[in-house]
Image 1 (cartoon, rainbow, N blue to C red):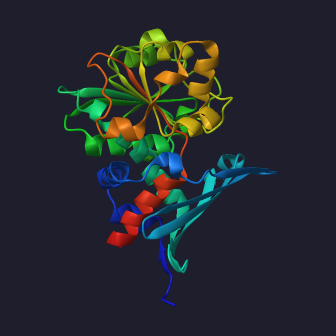
Image 2 (image 1 turned 30 degrees about the vertical axis):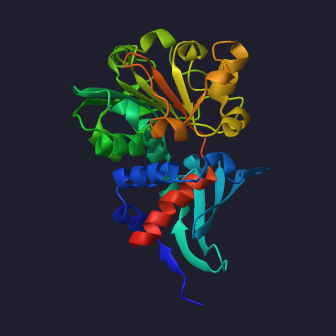
Amino acid sequence: MDEVKYLDAEAVFATLSPAEAVAALRAALASDFDPADDIPRTITDISAGNMIFMPSEIGDWVGVKLAGVSVGNPERGLPRIMAQYLMYDSTTLELRTVIDGAALTTLRTPAVSVAAIEPALNRFTQPVNVVIFGAGPQGVGHADTIADVLDVEIADVTFVVRFPDQVTDDARERGRVLAVETAEVDVALSAADIIVTATTASEPLFTADLVKPGAVVMACGSHDAHLRELPAELFTSAMVVVEDLNTVLREGGDVVLAISDGTLDAGSLVTMKHFSNGEVSADADQTVIFKGSGMSWEDLAVAAKLVDRA
């Protein structure tokens, strides 16, 4: 049996750029693989938070992410998510590679958001304004991935947070930081071409009237059917792109609650496979929303490219 390789966080980020992670996901979507066939993940509540088991199989690989979410870790100065990713040969099931799961998640989650709706980003021909709710690893990751993929210049990046004093230098190097209650937030939102929500919020972060037509919105903050970051009214005339229909109706609170509020028709949902591959497109002035909650195949698609490069 060959020696098992280990890719730590430094190796993950050094091996694959955000744009390359996006390309790996879009290549999977362009293949015969269908996210609807992915293995559903299992989430189990424990005293500290929950444990997540995420297996998937694509081509020569079987991958499993084991992740623990400890809600009290930020107060301890520790990451909220602890994880490892295990890569197995799909024929022999020999363990080949172990990858730092938190780093893989940080790389793939914003890559999923961008891969899902990259065709909509091509509508921008002038410098764009970006507003990101949340300045943690996913907020910063979305800023980096958007910058790495966009063909146009980013004019301004604004991070909107509850506790500005807790924002890291990494975020401050990428854009300005505003507290949620400041008047400048509404001004920034009204000018935003791209809006990202990467928070633990359970209620809408802003009102729909602040979002201009043609904006691209990426919501990735939760995998709970009872939580939402976006206002229901935002869905009324938007094109809504999702990872998979069954997954979003089980885990995507923004979508589930908009449907129950009567502002979104479940029959109008578009899968990221169809949108990424150009089978469905949005009007140039139509708001496009992507709601992602995370699927097992996404980790594997990025991990396979990491292993190929390492």
